[in-house]
Amino acid sequence: MGTPKQQTREQQQPQTPKVKNTMINGSPTDDDKEEELAESALALFRAKEEEIERKKMEVRDRVQAYMGRVEEATRRLADIREELDALIDPMRKEVAILRKKVDTVSRELKPLGQTCQRKEREYKESLEAFNDKNKEKAQLVTKLMELVSESERLRMKKLEELSKNIETLH
Image 1 (tube, rainbow, N blue to C red):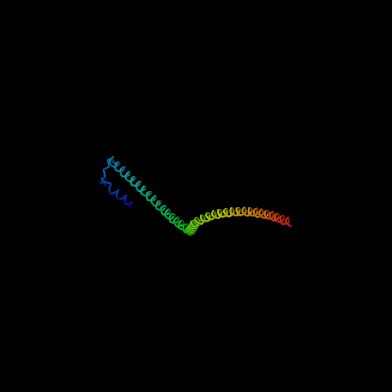
Image 2 (spheres, helix red, strand yellow):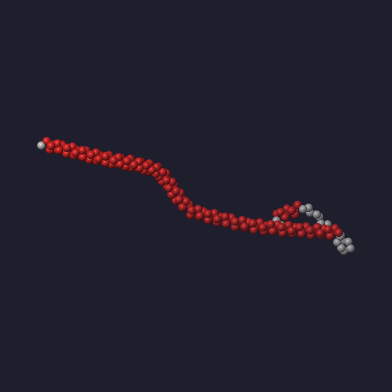
């Protein structure tokens, strides 16, 4: 029995009625030889077709087996990927949470940094104004001391003059 394709091919080929030619002088006639050649060519053709079909089925079976191995390897790789994702996923979540916290703190730090810089500027300006006023005060105190000293000297001089005047009166 052949495959369904072979059976349909055999059915499609016209069936020639086999008529036996008479032998002339005990040897087959030309028609007999042609018929034998045609039958052997047909048998050879059918044998080749069967061999081709058999090889085709073998190749198909090998391809199916290979595809089964490929599908199994694909399933194993998918399982490995899932396991890998399961290992990586918790770390990703933790990293994402920490990054979010870092971003939040960074956003909070920005205005605080600006406030700090503003207050540092204000402090430096206030310190500079304080130092300037201290210098001015020191200069004023120095001038005051000079004036007080000069005033005392003048008063002492006046007192001495008055004292001399009183002595001259006596």
